[in-house]
Length: 354
Image (cartoon, rainbow, N blue to C red; front, side, top):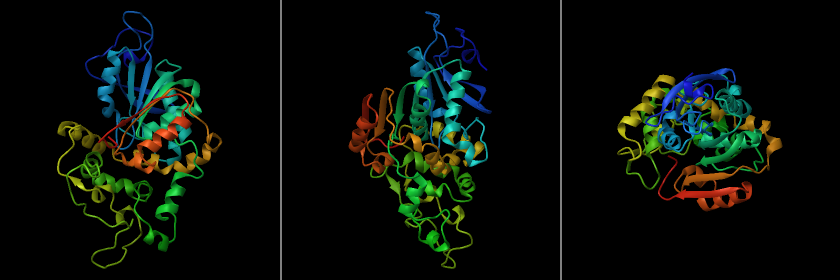
């Protein structure tokens, strides 16, 4: 472990670029990127900790700019590779990605760094996890900044159950139900062999996921334009073999292909993402999509609970996640009710999920 992550010392401060270190917490190995130090050189007091929690498909690298900015303002800024991603352990069973285990990862990292409390910043699944840290370990969270994924106070059923009812049961349904099911990427992430298919299409999947914003991005047409989850075998005009991800092309063929990467992700940075996911594969991160119903059952007693910590929420008005929640104005209205200490809801015009 680096000096900045062990003991209350005033060495290890880094204000020019993030560094990385490794720790053990909650029974697994974690890779952390960080900037700044635990202690302030001038005051000899502990700097406040900010943990940055990424989502899918991502790793610590996405928070490189924020780490540096926070370090320059005397915060100890840390971005873990989340469980299943990058240089952090990737357990192989879905149950090992349940909400309590993930929260214990965050708590364990915090304690390993010598803190009892921290600020949380989360994007995508990282935002979802930050919300649940507020609920499950409220005393550990000073304040939360969530990006792209709003807090949902009431869920009458598990998310996968809801999606199967809306799009058809492609996971555990009958053959007829599967054949009639419609594509939804979260359900697609639950199909057999989905990680293998993503691993075959790393570059194309990331290129389209990062680059496409509906109605904004100049694109070529997608190869697959059917709303059906499973695609007929062109040669025989029927479904071939078992209905798995091998018969259900993913986002790398269903999203229109941008003619160029967006300005926020230079080619060199994009190559970092491609290299990382070619090295690690997608399996670990996809487990997060396979636990929503499990997590709903584990947290039913928290249904209807408000977030009591100070909250900053940031999203793009073109983010497809925000649109599924009724749009930016609807999200802000919901947050005013569910987060009594909402400091601000920032809506970035013309911006998508990234």
